[in-house]
Image (cartoon, rainbow, N blue to C red):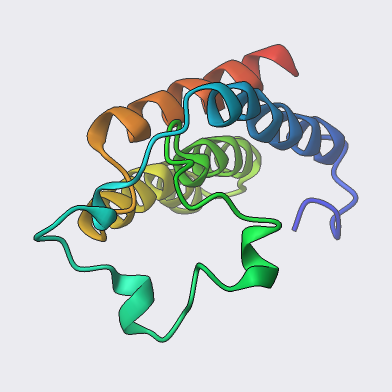
Amino acid sequence: LLYRREDPGFRRERRAAVVAMTGALPVFLLFPTAPPRTRDGFVDTLAHRGMDLDHPLLVRFYNPIAAMPSHHVAFAVVTGFGLGARSRTPLSRALWRLYPVAVTGVVLGTANHYTLDAVAGAVLGVIARRMTR
């Protein structure tokens, strides 16, 4: 959206997304944590959709126990607040700023993350935005 409009803020938002994604890597590598969906009593929504997360091709690029911090929430904070700040109407600004809240609800509701994972992801997203002002 920002790229298509040739918005000068596009590069900043792209840098913030890269910083947020890169900032989580040390935690993923040093302290991998499993998501709650892997515990007994939880429904693994991805497995019910026929997705095999243990497929040899996927495991080369995907860490199934990398839940802390939440990339989902970090990216939602970066994009939601970035696009919200550049929106032209008050309604679209408000909707974009609610986007991280909606994503947090989804990742908690589907047992992809614990609450602390989501909070850490939100903090990571805020830090990434501030680092790329």
